[in-house]
Amino acid sequence: MVAIQIGKSAIDKLRPGDKAFIAYDAKLKGFGVRVMPTGSMTYIVEYRPGTGGRNVAKRRVSIGKVGVLTPAEAREKAKDTLAGITRGDDPAATRRRERGVPTFAAFATTMLDDAEKIATAKPEQAVLRIGSIRGYRSLLNKHLKSAIGAAKLDTIERTQIARLHAKIGKTSPAVANRILEFVGRTYKAAADAGEIAEGTNPAHGVKSFREVKRERFLSGEELQRLGAAITEAETVGLPWSPDPEKKTKHVAKTDQRTKIDPDAAAALRLLIFTGARLREILHLRWTDVDLERGVLFVTGKTGRRPVMLPAPAAAILSELHRRDIYVFPGERSTAEKPAPRADLNRPWRAVSKRAGLTDVRLHDLRHSFASFAAAGGASLPIIGKLLGHTQAQTTARYSHLADDPLRAVADRVGATVAAALGGAPAAEVVPLPRRGGAA
Image (cartoon, rainbow, N blue to C red; front, top):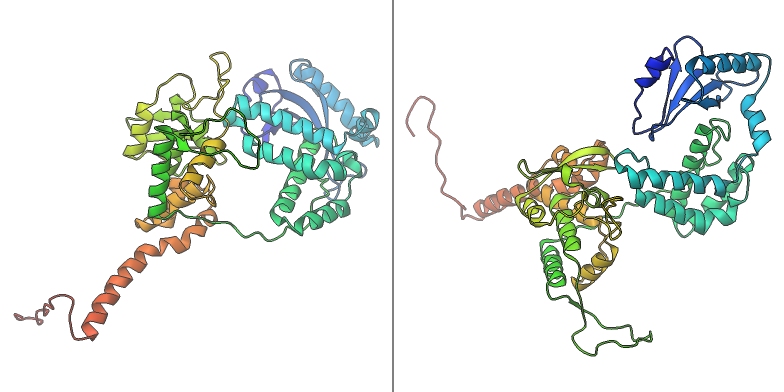
């Protein structure tokens, strides 16, 4: 919690962070300034309605924008508001009644639209990444709109969410769990915006289904096939044939091949060589590339972090043409509105199919990087640092891989012992010198 003496000089010193925060006034309890990641600031009053007490959920009401009200005007307005609360007023509830609580679908759509603007313009400040926003939109359109979309936020009950979670969980437990996650995030944002009382969340208490983490690691031979497919795709192109069940016109009868663009090939190779997350590579800017020191400074789900560049990865970047602030610019990127590449879905489907790896996801390249690091003798803490993990338990999924170097040593020792037991020593036995004398 930040405490300041709210005034012009103190407000001018406030700087936005990765998440919204409130700077509370050091003298007037409940009076504060809410600072959004975008930089916008609003004066607020926070209180507990009724008789108060810690068992009563806090409520928050906005009293004006910084810049529209002066700090002195905001302080007087906050005093009046707090005086009314002491007399029994509930300004947040009154305001909701006056303007009406939004429906779940309306508020969730607005929340995702706002999040997408930040994720596109300032990905380093984004609370939600583009991939997460797309996933939440899909959940909203496929499941939540029909179930609770038209209901007001303050009318949705826990039993409704529990029934929906149980229904979807029968066939897709992971999807059901993501719905709980999305509902919880939506209600937190609604409370922060003053639309509902703080602490309201109908998904709270609904037990998530147990999920089995999917892990797929490429073998050395599979990695060779993938490398060959990428090379073929960017040079002569990958052979293809039209779907016999679909009607196609004007299709060449012979030598039907499809090439992938150089950027796609380079991005795929960087994912393989670095173990970085997809968005960390696609949102990479040239100012974040330090070829001299062999390091990238990427921004992803765990914030900004360094990624080590092995020599082959550095060579890939050194050969790329710099035509945008982004290393991998999008199709519609311009000098006025630069934008990163959105995805690698189409080229990945093509090369993975050609390599016979139809069960491998792009994210599995990250798992495979960890498996090769473990096979090379890297410890779990080192693997965690390479992958940018902030929690040790996240890296723990690779614990069985970290045993591979130990197993190799154990196998060599076992072979030596087995040979000795069989009467055929695997190496010359050198007697140790006796204490105080020669051998």
